[in-house]
Length: 91
Image (tube, rainbow, N blue to C red; front, side, top):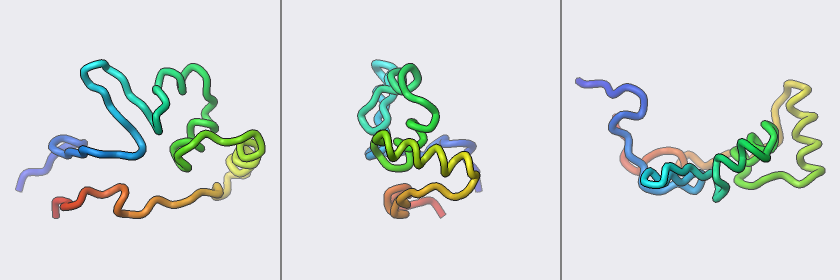
């Protein structure tokens, strides 16, 4: 049995979270270019985006920062397992 390293041989054709335009060398998370996130968003804003699929409002960001500072669980929605696994996973 051959074991692939990293994501070698793993193919995803659709994702709500990200889009990779390989020809143009661009990466987007929820429609926002990664370059824009790197230049204009804080760590906390980007983390909120990845967990919730949208950037936070002012009050949400303040609450999220408090949760992170406490070291406790952050209020988040969980993704259904079907959103993060391929339709026919390799055994």
